[in-house]
Length: 338
Image 1 (cartoon, rainbow, N blue to C red):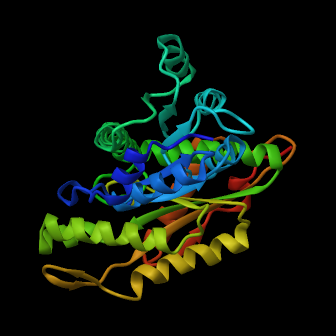
Image 2: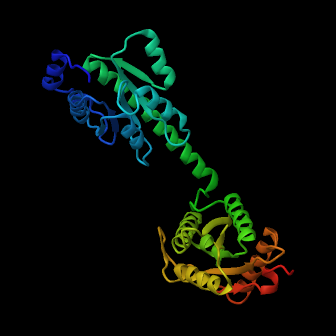
Image 3: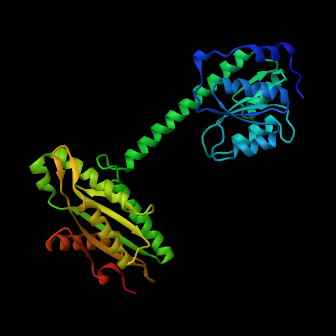
């Protein structure tokens, strides 16, 4: 049990927080403190600072909380707790490599330099010696929050860079390199599972006429909408990417020839049934689709180049036969013989 100095309890209970510097209401904090009075005081102040508070009275419970999917990134830990002390809890937190960084502030009655060093080496980011000044606590918490905010900004920037590296800038679907990588991955999976794999090559019909008549900005709007509609008409584990120009490549895992035709017809109707709204007014758009349904056998699937070549041949057949239609490559082209 921690003895709460009367002046600290009075100060914490009576003083008003500085409302001019409120911390984000989205912030969360874990308070692990075995003294119930001191824990309630800390809870009160963190709530006034607009934190969402999770409060526990022992180290084992704190560790369970920190292993949760949406665990707080800021932890205020008492050094001495039943079940697991703050030092061991720090070590466990730092032993986990996955997930975002957690900022740990250690509260301790120990003021010996060796104890302070031990706490920091165990993984604490900062410490406060009891009894402490509330303004100092708030200042140290703000310092930790700045670090966590910086981490969040870096994660967002990293995510944006990763998205840009794998997605087509105009249509926001996968770019050529990414969709070909996904195709290679699905081919490898199909070889292992002996499952079928569908590939659809899509071409926007008479796209040059759209650019020539309405301009490239309208053409860009058409491509964006086509990419969006294709993606919305697929299952969550299917993939669509911009293959080049006005062509898109769709990878449909676990799909045989009959179901692949159904999927392709759904994509065709999704584009043709409603004009694309553009700055130049509604623009009617259709697509032609070439399909390959590949089934693995003892020798495996044909290679990616053969699948793409066969899908491209089926696409040209669709275009030569009037466009706005679906054509599937012959089974002999889509499957490798034993």
